[in-house]
Image (tube, rainbow, N blue to C red; front, top):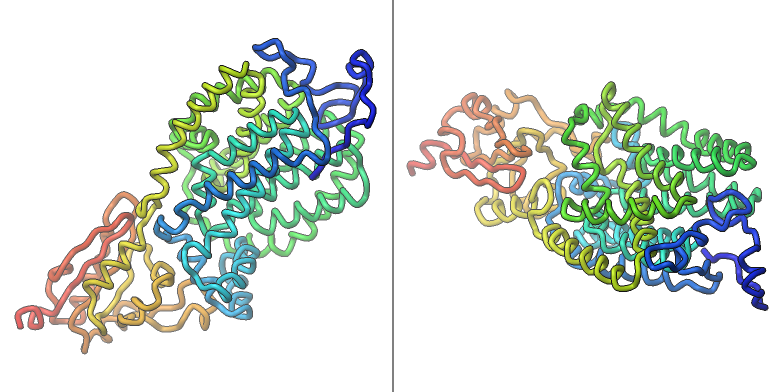
Length: 517
């Protein structure tokens, strides 16, 4: 993603300052922010737009994001959503296609992308998360390109580095879900739009429309980036409006079947609730990268938006419009959770980079060191095994140490066969009491189960039963006592042992005569 080359022969300073440009999102004839002065009395940016050969900021951001995002990538336990990824990618391609017709179509593109990785290299945490780490690296490079293109080389370096160093970015670099890829595609689509503002062509419009279609395929809600793009086009580049609208409509037509299918699978987001006032804090701290970074990032970004007038419309609309619009819709139809608007975080990094670029060198160094120091606790915390909503590795350890071959297994409180999919050897040691049909055969994420009375009838020759339940913040209340009573001969739920792990519990119940013996 290069930029226009400088003239081979330097112009006299007076001519250089008079020359007009159509670069970036600013109106034609404006020099962007280069005419504004920072606290040092220097130009607001480094004073250079760079040349197409200056890939330094992008390479630095890519390498930094990849190294930081990959560090300790296999330490955090897989959690229930990543377990769903494992379950889906263990299907054959025909089985996966059938599954998407019934459930999780909105993540179908992601499962299809991961399928060859899992087929070739297995479903270890590092392999599953590697595409996300690479996506974060490409997104960081894109952020650096945008900063350099729109506001000078210094802003590119600082914005790309800020994105790479953000704990929230690393959090999703280490998650086998599509949100890091959505962020990368949102950044790419913005890069392509900026190039369109410099020189429109049918080829560039086609690339832009194709990227939007790909973005929507990985997450329909990622298309909320169009609110920011629309602001840029309508405020600064109305001559692009017709071509931009055509590209957006073409992407919408391509995504129409997915939109139709997703509308028939609304139960996939039935767990979402209307946003509470507390979600504002989660949103702000998430966009800053962590709660510790909120104040300094807000200060740097606010200063950058105040100084860099030509960036203000794009970055403010990118940062605020998608989450606020989704929150407003969610007051009627709940659709909001922070990870669905993770793709807005690059705007915060760009704004912060623009602010840091305008500080004097000593203050810039101090601000950078403060930001790094405040980011460290977040990076340390997210690399703990139990840093996710639930610690399925702990669940597996409990079963491997304490379960006996042939023990029964019942699922309760939101748990199903997906949560144990990453641990096939543990699952094979147990008897899935309620099993009726596998996920592959049923064309579902978790397979099909028999009714509780039928499960009770199957317990006749089983002496010990594990009840696995999930619950965020509160213990699982469903101990399957009714099933155990109907089977007869079992003691009180958990009479042979109770274990808690982050996000869930395991109860071991044995027959009274068996425990007595």
